Structure formats: C-alpha cells, structure tokens
Length: 143
Image 1 (spheres, rainbow, N blue to C red):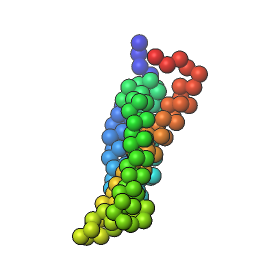
Image 2 (cartoon, one colour):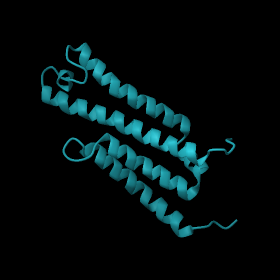
Image 3 (cartoon, rainbow, N blue to C red):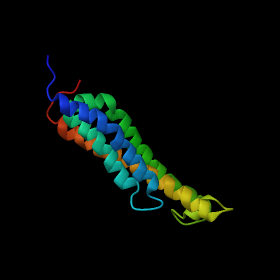
Image 4 (cartoon, one colour):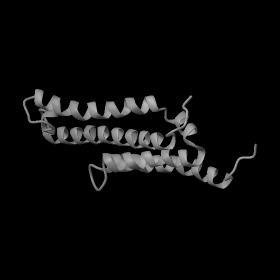
C-alpha cells in the first residue's frame, strides 16, 4: 500500500524533535523569563498531537502510551502537591519554597519553582495528549 502525504510525514518526523526541544527550553527557561510548566506542557502535547494527526492516533498511542500518560499526569500532580506538603512539614506555609533549603532560601526558591513547574508541565502535556486521544478515538474500537 502506497503511503499518502509523504512530504507531510517527512516534515512531521523532522519537526517533532525540535518542537519537543523547544518545549524543554520553555520549561527550563520559565525561571528567568516568560514560560514555564503550562506553556511547555502545551508545546510538548502539540508535538504528540501533530504526530497523531499525520500518522493517526493509533500510531501516536504506540509512541506515547495512554497508560504511561495517565501515570505521568498523576505523578505531576503528586510532585506539585508533594512540594507543598514538604514545605509545610518543614514549618512553612504551603509552597513556601524558601523552606526547601534551610541554609540558602534563594536556592530553595529555585528548587521549588523547578519542581513545581516540572509537575505542571508533566500534567499538562499528559492530559492534553490524553484529551486528543479521547477525541481522536471516540466511537472507535480499541485493541
């Protein structure tokens, strides 16, 4: 069977790693400028959604399995909440990042923001991709 849209498939395979790399840049640049977990999560999800639109949702699900995405979504929420609980256990308020490092509160601030944004990024990317899967496979039999 001859594959259709050869140019679109090749361009998608070429662009997907760069989209993911840009998502990581936005994720880790969120400390110093515009961006952060939500924006990065949407960009990463856009890479998987583009892949699914071009190659089909079944092929996308082989690349990013729904079970693994559900795990990542839950892990992101646990990471976010876990940072808040740890700061409370150390005597601070919920998400008082300065409590993460008793010797250097500025380091604690950076660590807390990195962890929180990481949790948000994981959750947003996973949930957005799962929403795409739900709509793309609605009414179709899963195997």
